[in-house]
Length: 120
Image (cartoon, rainbow, N blue to C red; front, side, top):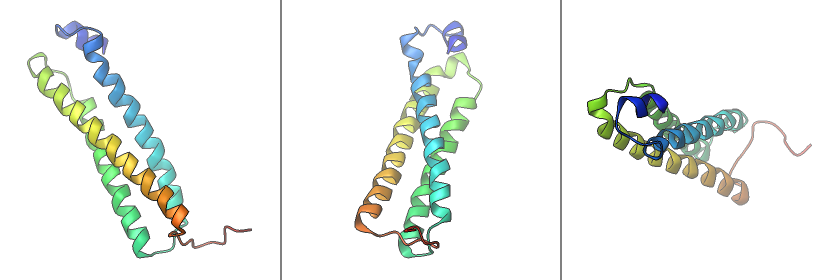
């Protein structure tokens, strides 16, 4: 963020979009970590397929945001990069909410079937 401030005329507050993007990225990686563990114990059902589709969408969007954040910053392309990062951050956060909401709803509805006995 400091590098971006120095290489452009952006203020400290104007580069905070990067911090927010990194925070969302970390949250998504944490969510993905636990969804992989959860998916490991799910029986193969249509509900599991939908869960894995949502998981895959989140994974792809998270990787795309990560790639944007790793790009070298060119002073003349800062406004374009900022808009791309802001757009992708919003999209990634919404995909994370979809995964979390669907997983919680599946638990409440009893939609998930497991390949091990978890009642013991």
